[in-house]
Length: 156
Image (cartoon, rainbow, N blue to C red):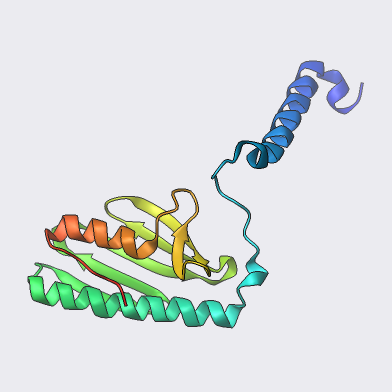
């Protein structure tokens, strides 16, 4: 016997999984699922991605630095270089926000909510996390507000 013929149960399980995955791929449209959707990276040109992402990171650094200075946060520091913005909040943790050019995404590492990957949503003019539909700015405002015990506004 050759291949999967020697293992009929394994073959049945594999075929069953293939059918299940295939049915799930088509069920998103039928059920109105709001799970992750495939992204067409060609819809956002690389130069446009860099312009939008760089503006976002620079804006975040300016706004967050202002709050850090005004609120006199112990151990506060920001650093922005090579597409990576690091925000240190002393004992409250560190945020890392960086560009992921191949995926046309901004990635967030948060001491509160963990990792998230944001895609540019042209209609909303916002970076949106596909799994939860959260906007990057709104998420950061909420989390930083809770950590710093202040009203945080990161809008432009």
